[in-house]
Length: 212
Ligand code: B12
Image 1: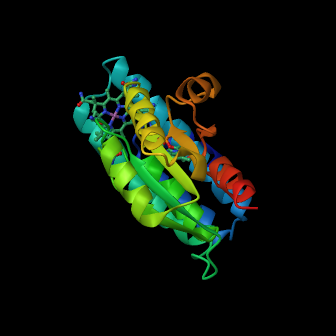
Image 2: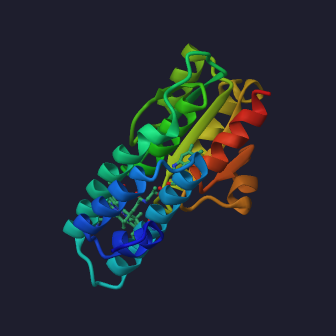
Image 3: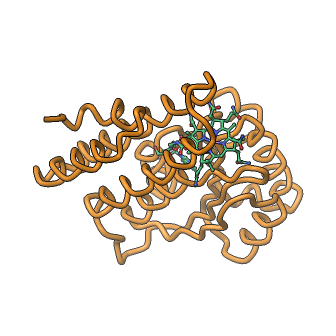
């Protein structure tokens, strides 16, 4: 029998039955929120493995598409364990995947965890231009803006977005959190963001600190 600690390997192997069986067994043990976050991270690591095997020519685009569906389905199973969206709103986050990038699974995981923590999320979706972010921030007046992306090129779009928010005179009223695979401490400093996150659970903690 597979242990849930094997989730990374099963996900990397695109073993759909294995992943779903393990998750069913895992859920039956009534795991803690911390264990659930760990399970999400194991799935995330498994996706890096898929990416590496795609780069190495072992997996093809169809496998990448399948991996996305597999992770989305896996997260749907885990989502109820994250707690339901709190009715008391602690803050508002305008969130979106930046221009040129169509990846949204990580963004959606962050969204679900932030909602469970009581944040109202205004999700712009994928491939969103700097102008769309500016428009929505003017309209909604959030405390936080979250830019998502997994392509290396997403960093350029995040930079454009932050510059556009500055040019629109909105920068001083918001905290900017950049998230996804290519973000780092260096990128955060270069882009002039307030924080970065490669892990949704950590990202929620940062947002909670910001809204006090
Ligand atoms: C699934 C996948 C796809 C799916 C995406 C489906 C979807 N709906 O998102 C599909 C098949 C569509 C796809 C397409 C492509 N992909 Co792709 N894809 C992946 C893969 C395997 C997994 C990404 C993923 O979901 N990871 C799991 C999630 C949970 O992790 P995460 O995004 O990091 O999210 C976590 C944190 O970062 C954080 N977080 C995420 N977002 C945010 C946002 C905020 C605000 C915060 C606070 C936190 C936060 O919370 C999450 C949970 O902890 C990666 C491999 C990899 N190493 O990432 C390649 C990868 C990203 N893809 C890649 C490529 C090349 C492509 C394509 C160009 C392929 C092609 N030839 O067409 C296209 C690009 C399309 C485009 N313009 O965007 C490359 C990118 C290379 C690069 N360095 O730029 C990668 C790295 C694969 C590789 N090694 O070559 N892809």
